[in-house]
Length: 119
Image 1 (spheres, one colour):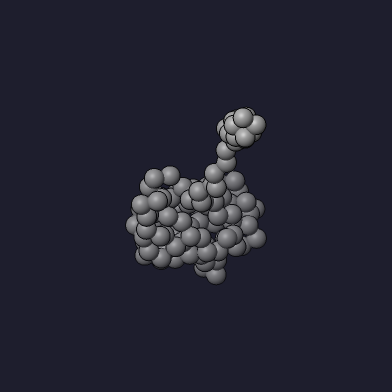
Image 2: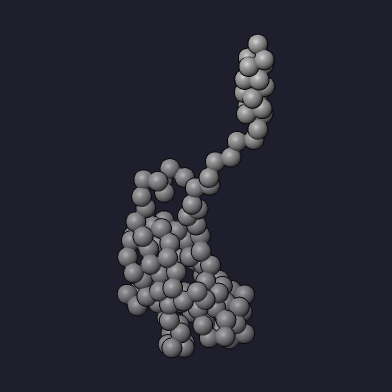
């Protein structure tokens, strides 16, 4: 009989314990690139298809964002202005500031997988 009560007590303790599951990896639907000191940071960004990338100009100098393939182009961004673009197709997207062509960056867009869609 003691074994019965011990088993019941153990089962009750297990049921009362909080259940935790490992967190699924997060796939950011948005990513921010900071423009400051004549650089894009991070210079290389990897996102899943469907993600939006936003460039924030935190520099005191105007900049813009221009795709090397002419897929996207921002207006000239003053301090605290921003530009966003949603990447729907997997691929490699290079860009630069046409006002300061030495400023370059790359967006790598990966295909969504079944597990990405389920999240």
